[in-house]
Image (spheres, rainbow, N blue to C red):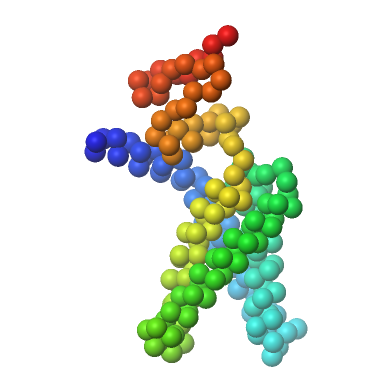
Length: 185
């Protein structure tokens, strides 16, 4: 039982490590873009309109994030319907934003923390971490969710997640016994 659990954990880790690393890199660059655009806007063209500056910076960073995730992180998973994918991406980003805002709300109204450092930590640290975890799985399983069976390096991802192989039309063999699936002719 422990060996099976360890095998599943190793399988999941090997399945996600590249996507997680790429997702983290895209998120880091998006964070820098968001911060740089925000500082530039509220220090210059949108001085006095910090809320709108933050909204515009977030939109710019989100567009970058969608393009980078579509064409790099999840390039083997991108959907054929670009509009549907973009709408799902936007919806998942709104949910991530609500998670971060919810952390600030919880810190302020439930924990009665009103100082700026506490609220910053609640929103930009705890909220960012929880929102990022949500976004990764949402992007992977709902936004960029095309089947990867045609790509050799991703062809067995469903087996790892499900813990068993469902034979396709006419296949025999079992990964549990080490047999490779064989197509019956």
